[in-house]
Length: 431
Image 1: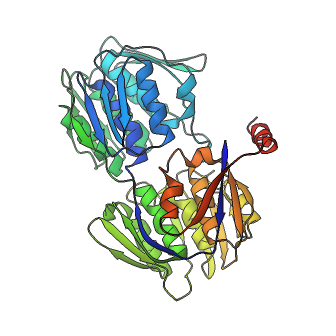
Image 2 (image 1 turned 90 degrees about the horizontal axis):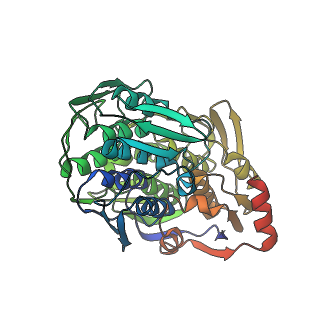
Image 3 (image 1 turned 180 degrees about the vertical axis):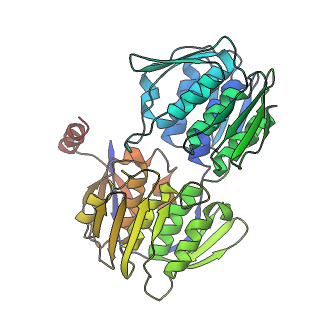
């Protein structure tokens, strides 16, 4: 195990490259299960979630090669092998295995997923969709058992807008008999990306990116080649870093419309943002940052995954900013760590009240989940002195080659191995 160290206070310059979208990748890889020949996905991020999914596909008989950000999957010899625990426990998005295996084999056994601990994120909407299409779903000894004689198209209304449920139902429905209609569907760019892959494989999908998706089932799907979209959350994280300490930073390989809500907030704060076709140029500017209020909402609203990095930037803004998370009310686990660094933040229910500007000081802090870890990296870049971050395995779930990328724009960041007593403390914390 290792830790990240960041010497803060240095101005940032240069170009930083955005990798493929993590939230697309974790759905595109299971989707390959549905094909009858080789699927190739270009520009995948080299992150731990991707590697865990590759291993899961190999476990069920897939022939998998992941080299230089290109994944090839030959699913022709896959079998419906139970996946009750092990690697399934390591990532939240393992639930997409359910929809893909149910779609192809009409049965699946998948352990309850792991990943970031953000409080209750039930999969009841996924199960509701599977049952509407004719599957029997039971929870036995900590694993979900799915069985169906056949899957039939159905009309499914999601009680809450859920990216995971929308994608999982799509995966199960593409090979079902008849038409499936998903109402109150999520509209995130990652859903369009998954629908594009499935359509290239021969699926018949209309309405992806709107709140009503129609899927006409087909008898089989074939292999194809697909290029993943850029990661809007990684792009947004880099934009926040540049807004905090950038003289002139270019965020490259980005779809600007995917980060419009963040761009608007940064401009409201007084950050200079210049949008180009596939790049966004950012500089801090000379005037003090202004306070803003932020409320996370489903797409195209402000994304919950950028709430934590932006909250760090707001510690440097003049006045009181209020950040409200309507998606995951428990997503303020980074606040205690930021307070160690000198931040003035109070949490009330699902809102954080941030008073600034406050100078941040380097400290020993711990990442409790992926985006909280990203927030601590932003804080380390701003802070005076050296910040030491443990729990970096969470950060590596979503940010590919983060250290090298940040070093390229002038961040003083490096890794060191955890000492024995630090590893013991980490293990005790995880009990």
